Image (cartoon, rainbow, N blue to C red; front, side, top):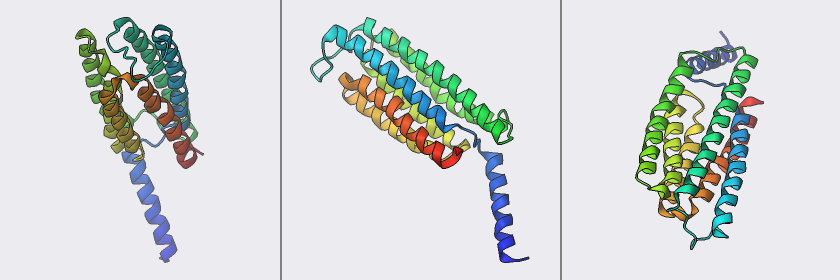
Length: 206
């Protein structure tokens, strides 16, 4: 057997093994759309904050205002729902385009690996709400989402973990300077998602 044939066969085996252990039909466009949703939501949230406080600077802390935070949390929940639905629809379409089964053992492991930190984060955020610790909510959203991405990266593209590390970093910054929590949330869920989604689309989905 020629060396060229050996390399080709090894590449085919490696590709088959990768497809059997990783879900490779995640849509980069879903990341872009999630980022756009987040930026729209953040702009609405920003208008809510500035309408009450006039501006959003280091001297303007809205962290003790429960009404403002409940409004922001409602917006974030709507964005999450839209993002999840968009990701599911576009990833299913991507899988069908590749002739792959989108609901398989690997995709189930991917979802379960994300669900654990997300569910834990959700409970933690509820506890923060009950204790009126509103200034840590943006930080918790970013940190637990980042942890879920790192956990899920073992079942999909390894690039996902770098997005997770960036989200955690922004989450820690949001805990340090909660007055800028909304801006850091917008950077994490908005700007980073658009950058990541664009990169993933041109690298894997074209």
